[in-house]
Every structure is written in C-alpha cells, then in structure tokens.
Length: 293
Length: 272
Image (cartoon, rainbow over all chains, first blue to last red; front, side, top):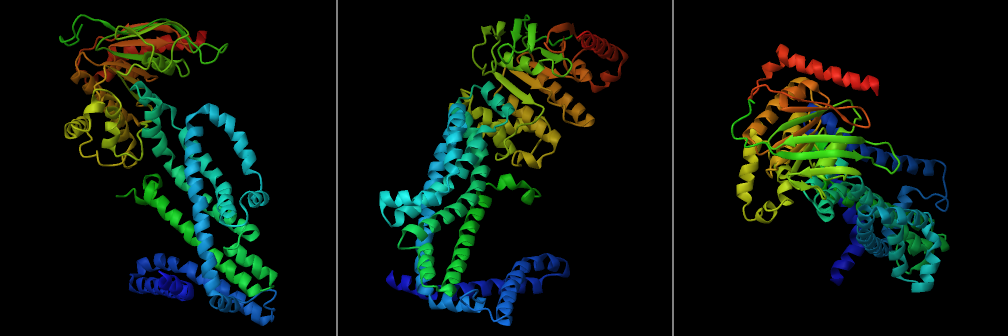
C-alpha cells in the first residue's frame, strides 16, 4: 500500500503526460487511417488539443518576449518545473481535496434527493421551504466557514461541510422540479386506474426527475469543489487550498500557478465523471443522439 | 336498432344528473346542470365548441373531480373516488419515454388489481396479451421500441392500447386524434371502431371531440354541449348499421346529420 502511494505521489505528472501522449497518438492514428470523408469530422477532435497547446505556447512566448518576471506571471515552462519540483506536495494535497469534495458532494446528493422528494411530493412543503432555501443559498458560504471552525475546529470537517452546503441546493431544486412538473394528463391516466400517490411517484415522478437530477450533479460537483477549496484555504491543514494559502504566504508564485493547474485537472476529471454518469443513466432523455437505432 | 344482439337489455352505465361544477369558489361554472346518460356497451360522443367543459365532463365521469351539485353514477354506484375501471387516452399520447412501448402498455397492469398481484408470476401471459393487442392496432413488433422512435399516429395507437390493456369497462377519450393528420385520423377511427366492436357490449366509450364527422362516424349517441358554462343542448342517436365503413362518411344522410349538429352548435355559440 505504502509503495503504491509513494509511486503515485512521485510519478503522477509523468503518468499524466504519458496518458495525454497516448491519447494524442490514438487520435492521430485514427485521423491518418480514416477516409477523406471522416477526416474532417475526426480532425474536430484534435481541435481542442491544438487550441490548448496553442494557448500555452502563446503564453510562453509572451512571457519570454517581454521578459516577464516569474514573480508576476510565470511562463508555462516555469509552472511545469514547479509542478515537477513540488509533485509530492501537490499530489498529496490534491488527494485530500478530492476526497473532501467527494464526501461533501455525496452528502449533498443524499440530502438533496431526500429534500427534493419531500418538496416535489408536497405542495405545502414546496411553498413553505422554498423561500427559506433561497435565503440559505444566497448566503456566501465563505462567510459560514468561521462558524464551522468554531464548532469543529480546523480540519477536514469544515471543508466537507462547506462543500455540502454550497452544492445541495441545485440538487434539491432539480429533483423537486422533476417531480412537480408531471404532465397532468399522465397523472390523470394513473389516477383513473386507482393509483396511489406513492405509485404515481415511483412509476412516473422519480424516473421523470432523473434527467433533472443528473443534470444538477454537473453543477453540484463544480460547486462542491469551490466549497472545499474555500474552506481549505481558511480552515484546514490539508488540501490544495491550504497549499495555496502557504505558497501565497511564501510568495511562491510558480507553486501557486502549479496548484491552479492541479485544481483545473482535478475539476475537469470530476466534471467529466458526472457527465459520463449522466449519459449512462439517462440516455433516453438525450434521444436525438441515438434515435436512429 | 342495428346494434349487435349480444347487447342485453340496455342498462345505464354512466349517468350524470343535474351536475354543476366550478374549479374555484365563486368562479364561473365550468358545467351547469348536465344531464347525460350513456348505456352499457354504447359508444357516446360529446361535441361542442372549445372551452365548453368537455374535459371537465371526462374528469367528473372518472371520479378525478367531484361535482359541486348533482350526482354522478357509474356502473350503478355513486362516484366518490377515481373509478378504477376506466381507461383514458388524450390528445397527447402521454407515453413514458424511459419505458419501451411494451413496458408502457404494461403500466396499468402494475397498478390495477387483480393483474398487479398476478403480473410477476404470469409475466409471459401478460406480455403475449400486450403483443396481441399491439398487433390488433397494426403495431406488430413495435413493443421493443421506445415511444419517441414511433410516429405520432403509432404513439396514439400505443396510447389506446395502454388504455385498454387492463380490460376496462369504460374508455374515456379526450380528443385523441386531434393532433393527427387527416389520413392517420381516419385510420385510427377504424382502429377504435374495431376495438369497440371486439368488446361487444362490455366496453362503454365516451369520446370527447370537436370533430363532428368523427363523432357521427363512431358514436351511437351524440351529446352537443353549449359554450361555457357547458350544458347539453341536444342529444341524438346515430342509427347507421355496424360495422360502419369509412365510405359512409361521404353519403348524404351522413352529411345531413353532421350538418344538423353543426347548426345546433352554431346556434348555441351565437346565443351565448
């Protein structure tokens, strides 16, 4: 176990570079092997790579051309060096950010589903709790972190709770909307068969709200990530946020940027995971893509 | 009478007596003093201008709404709950997009007793029945497709099958062909005509429509409603022999009935 952790901590940037290289190689292989007709379509898949590398290249050249100090804006090459130099710390803190985000997100999913079902099923609770929810959601969560620190001390709990608080709202709203907007005619069909409220919920309401639910996960995971990093910055000894707070105190600008890149990679990975889950679970709601079957 | 002999002494199946209803206290009446009587096994049509409370009538007869005054009796019992013996189909097919067509058909069986408790053990039998029903409306082999892979007319056929799979005694149709093109609509008239004929005498149908030709072609009895608040302004029987061919819609005596109904509704609109 320790060997594996050690290996991951020291070689994750190399693994990432190799992975990206293999992906580019695979795409190129497909483009070269494709017929002329498919080639234009496939070359679109290469477009993001060109544009991303192009942006970094322009950034690099501008930094070199105007001899910008690394203290103001480090060039991508300086950032890459910093990532390699601090790879152990970045890897360690990224891991903590990831699990705290996912823990808060998991809580938000469980709580969001429960509250969403309650609000969607009952007009009384929907009307009653909605203003309260909007009020709670409009509080900037960074203002709640000091209270969490007083309650739980500095540690992982404030980060998990901040991630939870910031991300459950879209889940609640979407689940409740999915339930509350059942077509009245579908409801009539079922009622005329003698269906109970619970049967209408399980047969129609819940399956119907699934696309809304999975759609909201994309928003929620991004928010949870913001929440955990904010809390780490202010009230944790672990996490990328905490690493940045310390790098900032040391005026270590290349490390700050390296941490930002790590945040971007981690964020994209988590976002893509939820998109993949959404496509898998609610393919019927994106019917146009495979209606031809 | 030209009706088939299997219809035993006519028994009123759906009876509305002096029914008035509004949706909000103090609001205008949706229907006012409705008197409707449909016999068992009969095909009745309700026609009228839009907004005349036809849909309210549907809800009252199935127990989805309860009248403010008057009585609604279905199958000899006063309606106090949703009637549970009704199948419904609307202008929108309202099929569930995450279920295949066959699974959509099975939905009523998952709710209505005794099918609900038998379904798991007799699955094959019910699937066969659903597929036979699909075949009878010209949807052989469409069961495994999702509703959104079917055309509008096919979806509406599937919706009719869903309304009939649990062998209801009462079929309520709320402008089910309103969104279809003229050719598909005539095809579906024949589908519903054959379904009704097959259940000889045991299936009572109430069709709400604003298409007078549709009403005259399909129904044994037609009620004309006035504009809001809805009242019955005329009731007439249609005595064409069954089975009726679509050709009769081009015969003069058919046109006469349509013309007569049209006149009565036009009159109701002008006096309203």
